[in-house]
Length: 420
Image 1 (cartoon, rainbow, N blue to C red):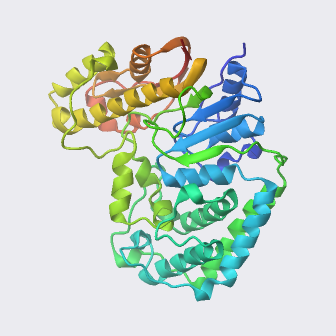
Image 2 (cartoon, rainbow, N blue to C red; image 1 turned 180 degrees about the vertical axis):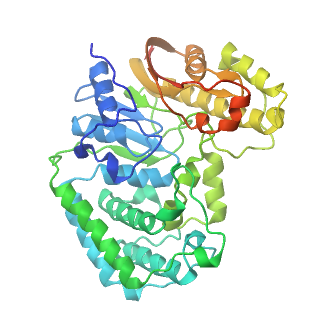
Image 3 (spheres, rainbow, N blue to C red; image 1 turned 180 degrees about the horizontal axis):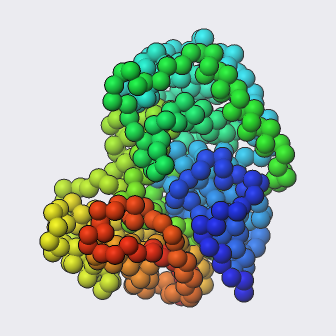
């Protein structure tokens, strides 16, 4: 049985397409490949990732000729994962879509019926120009909805949207800091980005050409297409006992706002502030919390209950309110998702989870142990644990937390479960 590599190893060659849309929360393609080898996955098996993100699990499975299913609640990541699994035939069709969009540019309507979130960074006229190109892309493919239904997009359509994602990010680069999980909005009109139609089309043509040129150099002519859905890890669109293996990483319990990281992309596909807020609140690990959260479930395990009780009674401000609720919602989602994994896994199936620990003030949040206890309350038994020390985590960036504890080295654990 082979060993599992460090999930955050970053030496994957370009053939794995990770650089198409860099994603903080993603793990290395080489890790995913080592997980497939550890599991002895083969053609005929089905691999599932219920937090598919940018599609590393599904793409690596596709390269190996193994069927896979990816689920993610953020529609932007569905588009990215679909684009990543494109074949050369998809690239040819995507080039036609891009050329048609440019040709039909002047025929498209410019205005939206609600607030356009692109104006967070662009002047109104510049936002209209971007919107005009995006409408032109829809027109060429008969996609009439105000916001794009990611489930209905083909891989070639997703590839063209990915090119537009990259274009917009290029224009607002100065608003994205070293911590790319947070994107600053403009504070004054003078800060807003101004672009012309010709600048946009030129940049769009450059990005699409770069993607297409790189894609045709790939050797992945016979990828086994994954099935990729926008959906909830707590309630996947899969039937019971349909998955042979699961390879995934739940969102870290470190208050990373994954929706904010994709605000520009959500704006591009037509979301407004209201629907953006709905997506933000629905994502696991969100920084927003509900007023009513319910009661603790004893099935979450002793470690989780002790942690939540210590957090709730902590002396610091907001510990018993906001922070208790945010952690409560995280563990509630984690438990429901683990139950769903148990439901979709076949008997004797295995699940590989990448989970990082953290701290709340001086209280150790041992999420790997909590996940093991939650899994033990269903039919998932721990088979193996691989641990890797991290030099930096999102939680350790906040230096003010050091008044409660010394600086710590976060630990990332790869947990392997088997279903009895």
